Amino acid sequence: MGQDSAGNRVWNSRAGKLAGFMLVAALASCGGSNKEPPLDTLTAEQIYKKGEYALETVTARRPEEAVRYFAEVERLYPYSEWAKRALIMQAYTLHRAKKYEEARSAAQRYIDTYPGDEDAAYAKYLLALSYYDQIDRVGRDQGLTYQALQALREVIEQYPDSEYARSAMLKFDLAFDHLAAKEMEIGRFYLKRGHYTAAINRFRVVVEDFQTTTQTPEALHRLVEAYLALGLTDEAQTAAAILGHNFSASPFYQDSFNLLKGRGLAPEAKGNNWLSRVYRQVIRGDWL
Image 1 (tube, one colour):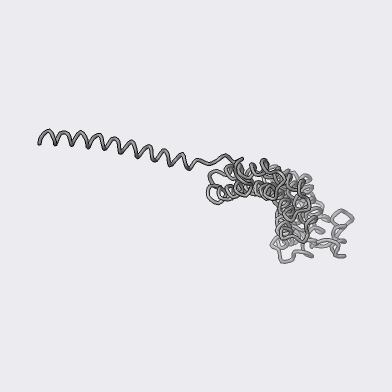
Image 2: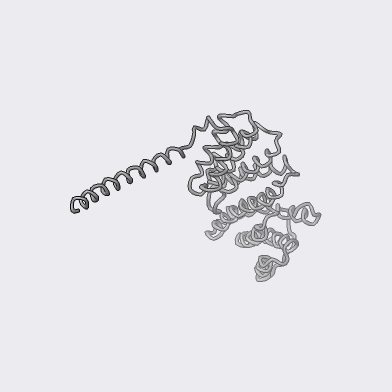
């Protein structure tokens, strides 16, 4: 009986090891059966669907996975309807992943290849967004802002009836205001340091080139400050008159009014200068 017990223990040990080996082999076999087949054995639709699946599940971590599938559709089935869809999805995925230069490249290729397609407007909009979404804080170089404005204008002008035109208009206004804010930032910098002529030049740019932005009331008020500091009262009074005519409810107008009042002056068009010409245009309603 002792021998039977010992034999059973040996058998059970061997049986356990064999069972464990068989389980590992089975798992390895299962893993091998789930291996992804070569993409060139799949249809364009199947590869595209893999890209969609990757986009829905792992974009936040691995956007390149979705892009890879969409690129393969283009490579393996270059003249198919699926290739066209895959290209616009590449642009979208790359933009979503903040790979803006690559997104622009994909969007531009779509526009060049399918200029008359219904998604060409969206491709142009994505291209514009790739610039717009890089507009950061006011203090940075504004080259991207100008490029965003140009691209957004093209969306508005080339696809005025598209669903993207309205969004492009809103973003255009924001980008335009951003440029004006940059001019104001530099102008205030000069003004605080007593560089009045340099400050005036910046504020003048806002009044003449960015008059429809939210920066205009402050620009006019800062002109009042700068011209008073230089003793140029005609220009200061005229700037205040323009401010009062267009933005009488603005706190900047009240500040300008008080500055002039403290010197025995009032807002009114005086002299023959660039601001008096602007004032005449305002009265005729040619601007603002």
